[in-house]
Every structure is written in C-alpha cells, then in structure tokens.
Image (cartoon, rainbow over all chains, first blue to last red; front, side, top):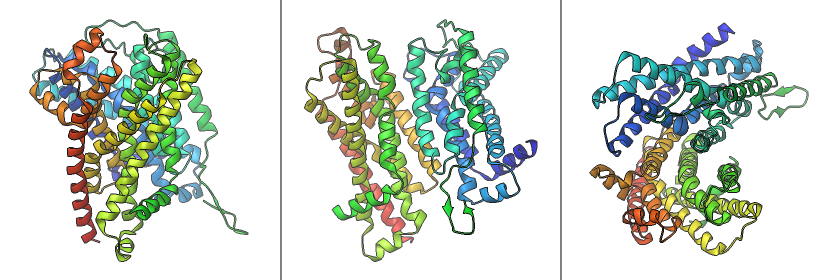
Length: 252
Length: 263
C-alpha cells in the first residue's frame, strides 16, 4: 500500500489538477472577502475564517475533492494504463484504496492552502485579531472540516470511480450534496447530515453565535459513512463496459 | 440550422446527457419536498411553496453548472474528435456550428426547468395540495430557462476562449455560479457598497433573482415592503440579461471563427 501511495504521489506531480484545487481554495477565500465587502462592519480574522469554512464546505470543497479524485481515477482509463496496472497484478480495489488515501492527503493539503490564503487576505485587508492562537485554531478547524467533508463524499468517489466517465455526474451530485448542507444546518440537522457533521467536531461557532452539537450523533454518522465506504471498497471492481472478442477473452 | 441542432442532439445522445440533466433536475426536489412536508413554507400552499423554492433556490445553483458542463462537452467535442475540419469541409460555417450548440443549451435549460416543474407537481401531489394554475408556472419556468441560458453565455465565452480541459471548464462554471449565488442570495444587492450595487444590477443571477423575489414574496407583507426597492420588473431583467447575452454570443462566434482558422 505504501508503494501504491508513493506512485500516486508521483503521478500527481504530472497532473495540473492539484493547481485546480489550489485555485478553488483561493477563489473561495476571495469570494468570502468580496462578500465581507458588502456586509456592514469590519470582520475579525476569526469571523472571516469561519465564513471561509462555511463557504468552502457548502459551495466548493465537496465538488472539488470529488473532481480531483474522479480525474485521478479516470486518467488510468483515458491513458489506457489501467490494464497495465492490473497485469502487474495490482487489484482495482487496492488501486482505488491508494487513490482514496492520497485524496485524503490532498484534503489536508488544501486546508493548509486555504488557511494560508485566509491569513494573507486578512493581513492585506487589515482584519483584526490575527494572532498565533487564532491562526492555529483556524488551521485545526479547516483541516478537520476538510477531512470530515472528504469522508462524507467517499461513497460518491468510490461509486463513480468504478464506472468509466461517471465522475462528472459525481461532481454534480457532490455540489448538490454540499449545498444542501446549508439547509440541513439551518434546520438543526448538522449532526445528522454527513457533510455537516464536521461542524460539530470542530465546534463551529460562526463568529458570535453559540451553537451546540450532539457529538454522539456526529460520531454515529461518521461511523456509518466509514462502514458504507469500507463495504463499497470491498466490493469495488472496474465496472467499465467490456468488449468481448470470441476466443480471446475479455478486453477491458 | 434545424438540421445542425438535430445533429448536436444526436452527438450528445452518445454521452447520455438527457439522463444527466434529468438526474440533476431531480436532486433538489427531494430535500425541498421534505422541507415542505415539514411545513417550512409558512402560509403558502405546499405546491406554490415547493415550486418557488425550486425556481428561486435550486435552479440558480444547479442550472448554470449543468449548462457549463454541457457547454464544455458541446464545444470541446469537435476538438477532441478532430471533426471540426470535416464540418468545415461540408461546408458548415463556424458561426452556424456555434449557434447550433448555443440553441442546444437553450433546449437543455428548458428541459431542466420543465423537469423541475414536473417534480414540484409530484411534490405538491404528495403533500396533498391544490395544484392551482399550472400554466402560469409553466410560463415562469420557460422565462426562467431562457434567462438562465442567456445568463450562462458569458461563461461559455471563457470555456471557448481558453479551450482547455473539462476540469478547467467545470471549475470556471462553479466559480461563476458561486459568485452569482453569493451576490443574489446573501442579500448583497441591499448593500450600500457601490461595487455591489453595480454588480447586482448587471450580473444575470442577482438580476433574475430580484425579479423572482418580487413574485415569491407575498404582497402587503413587511418583507415585501422592505424588499420592494430592490425588486426589478421583468422587462428590465430581460433587457439587462439579453444585452449581456447578445455581447457574449457575438464574442463566442468571433472566438470560434478564430479557432476555425487555426484548424
């Protein structure tokens, strides 16, 4: 598995998709900054960071991570390298697991990038309250939130990854799935809706408001998502349509 | 032109796009019907409430994304399969090809809003409410489809101009949608900031929302009085969106013609 992860990281170096991830993080921070311009009063670093977290999980991060994961899996098909990997032999399940693990690492990396942009924009816009303590707190919250959102979209990644050309549908669904989080949170379902359970774990307070979370429910939902993903990974196989040639076996 | 539009549909048939559009259009009605069944639309009739929620909240978020993805599919198809030179040899001019692709986007937009209306009808039946005037809602759905399809043309310029990967097109479309959504739904058009005032008066999503909100909020209520200064009449919305759409259309044709010259 360590080798698979290492090779996935090597492959990532060739793809420009990681830059797309960085660009989306920059765009969500800029968008939040833009929204602050139209809101009365000057935000503090903490409230700005909270708004970045909110916009990230509800508007862009679920779709971005599904897009990156889908692209990494689909490249094996479009570059026709899947058959070579299977001939080594590396099972499709192991390959998928390796890619999922690397996507988890990308989620953490993108959270660090997100914090970097948040801190830079805060310094540039002269928001108050930038201190080491608040920056570290925001970093922990962003890393935590990205990881929990990633876990919530894992079933989408595993499901669409098994089917050729299905990842765009997965991206559209992830966009919807993340966006509905705003409604779930607004109706007291933060601890039951998979995308928003992270809010409970990071104790998201949205600036001045005080929210309470049922951590037990969050843990249960998290475990359910992990079990669903584990079962899907166990049953995973390349479900691309096969072209049958008489007497020569199946060609993927 | 009709033949060209038909050809574009045949080409898209291979990509199972109709199912993709219907699937996307049916995503939001499920949670929104649950909200309506929980009684979260106040005094509104369940069907009216669900329809307004879908047209004002789901369509602005989902439709531009879908149009952007399908726009990228349509415009990158000839490049990916190296078929542009064959079309030019028929001969079909670049503006005809580009126009046919844009017309397909309008049809898709119409399909999306009609499926949305259909899902609202199903939701209304489940909630057991009176369906009332469906024709009025169908007209609103058609107007909304035309406005959003026209409003998505500026992003098609970027998709055609940069002529990069599908990933790039998707991210660009998502950002455009997010930007429009943030301006419209976080009430930025009520801001005193001059930049916000200009942007929320020219960009398609906030402009369309300012017309739709005037339909959605019940007249005579405090909310209606508070929001009245920000409402826009349909004529102004159509004028603004079509000016932007018209400029975008000519820009798309010009860029596509330039790319034709490079084949």
